Length: 144
Image 1 (cartoon, rainbow, N blue to C red):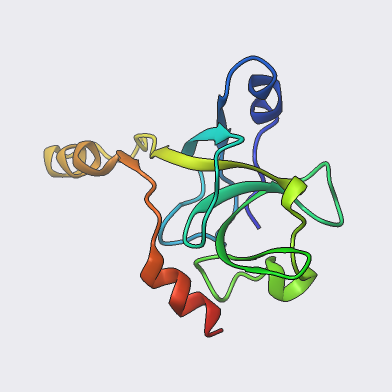
Image 2 (image 1 turned 135 degrees about the horizontal axis):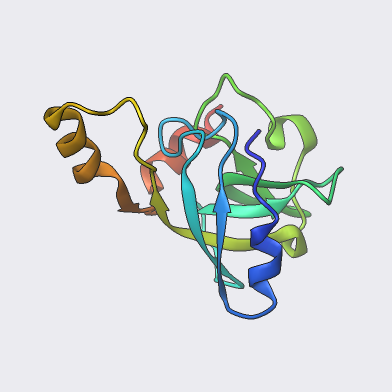
């Protein structure tokens, strides 16, 4: 389950945008371990959006998941990696007030082992990308 750095909480008090770092495999292939995120706090969320939320049972733990659908009691959230777990299939719906913000952008840091010109160009082309809503993924995820 991706855990996010506490920079997220500090930045939230000052600006509507904050930074976070992903740890864990539950959002692969959309997000990788080590990705940096730009989060917009208080943004309106819809099914298909990738969001940062407080874990329903460990509220000091921040996680990143994709909104699948609205259900009675809150949002049903799922990770993009069905094998990683740690989503609503484990803890049920997430109350609306635990959803902190919407992920807008991700940056994948350069790895020290990427030295060849081909690897550097490949990294440069894909390092920074917006995190878009995926309506088709939302439909696929609901089927799980």
